[in-house]
Image 1 (tube, rainbow, N blue to C red):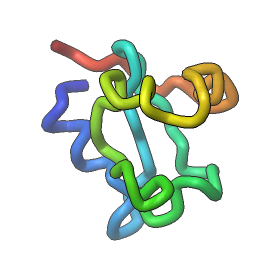
Image 2: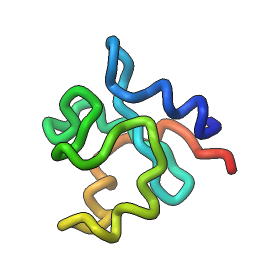
Image 3: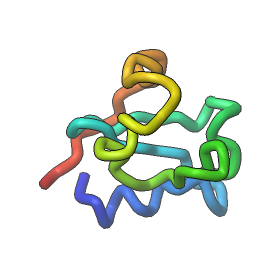
Length: 74
């Protein structure tokens, strides 16, 4: 999936909530922390969060509980 295609999965208008991290795309739709495609009023769905996760109060292991639905093309 390209970054432009990923943008469609922003949790708006019934779309699933996807985020990318280190080349993998995760479906976080079932997370209460991603309601409406926003995470804590800081992050939006449909984007690559690789550069931003270092600033999070959690590490990348939090993504292990979510299904990988694809790979992000460069």
